[in-house]
Length: 351
Image (cartoon, rainbow, N blue to C red; front, side, top):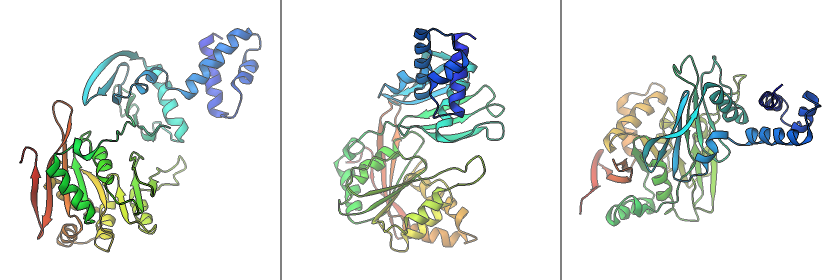
C-alpha cells in the first residue's frame, strides 16, 4: 500500500474505532513501515481527524463569515459581506472526505436516504451538506462561520433609533428583529440583548447555538435532529414549550421559522413579556405576515382572525435590518404596534 492508501485506511478504521491508537492500527496494517515514515503517517491521520484540511486556513481568518463548496472546483468564501472565489480547488474525492469529517463527529448521517444534513462544528459554525442525486454537481457544502462579533447597538442605528430600542427593552416590550439572510439579525439581536437588566434570567432557544449574550444568567437550549434510528428529535417548538417551564424572565428565540411561532405568540399573551426573536422578512409588515402564517401552522385549526388578533397583542416592536451593497449591516426601520396597526417610529436617514 502507498502512504496515501495507509493514511486513508487508518483514518477509516479510526471512524469505526474512535478510541484506538492510530499508531497501533498502522503497525497492524503495515508492520514494515520505517519508524520515521510511521510518525509522519500518524501525524497526517491526526491532522485529518482533528482538522479540516484545505479549509483550515479559512477558519484561521476571522474576516471570513461563510465558506462554500459548489462541488468539484474552487472554494468560495464571503468576506466583509462580499462573495469571492479562492485559489483553493477540491476534487470529488477530497470533498467526500471533507464531508465525512464534517458530519461524522456530530453523529449525523448523509447518504442517499438522507441526502441533506445540518450540523454544527466544535467552534459553533453551522454546516449544511447536500449530496447527489439531489446536488446535481455536488456534493455541496455551506459553512456559516461562528464569527458573531460583539457589536454595540450603535453600530447598527443612530442615537435616536438606539434609544427607541433601549426604551422598549427597559419597558419589557417584545421585540422582533426582521431581515433577509445574512443581514445581521443574530448579531443585532445579541446587541439588543446586551441592555437587558443583569438580575433577569434569560433562556435562549436556537436551532444552532450562535448567541453570545454578555449576561450573568443565561440558560441555553439547542434543537436536535433525529438519529439514524429515527429517535431523539427535539424541535424548536419542543424547546420553546420546555423553556416556558424554566422560569424565564426573558425568552430569546434565535429564529422563528416554523410552528413554534404559535407557542411563542401564546407565551407572549400569557405573561411572558419582553421576549426577543428574529424572523426572515423583507420589511416589518412582512415580518408580521410571515409570523401570521407560521403561527397558523401550529394553531391547531384556529381561524386566521384569532391568530392575527393574538399576534398583534403579542408583538410590540419590529426592528428591521438590511445588508447594503457595500456589505454593511444597518437598521433601516423601527416600527411599533399601536391599536392593531404597525406604525413606523424611525427610519434610516430620518432626523
